Length: 146
Figure: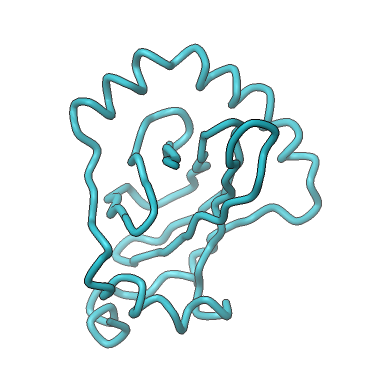
């Protein structure tokens, strides 16, 4: 099972179990999307010089798994597991390669269709997942966490 992460509709990473990605992006407001059978979203308002974390949660869809992006912040119960996840010897850091970019380009109409179909449903939710500026940690504090 894989899920593809986007910053709006620009591809960021293709993730599978026991993988993670690092995405260097400018500060400010972003809307991230995860696509599989459907699309789901997470807003982020990021401060410069901070590191933020999110996780993917899976759930069953009609034909295959669906995924949600969820913030992981110092206020979240999953925060305590972060060091273990990243330091897991089986975990692999992945980067978006040419094959991933080609896949996203070849599937752009389908990705846009999912974006357009599922974003209004997500916006209608009362409690939408969001990373706030205070959810990030300074880069120098990252070493203490790991």
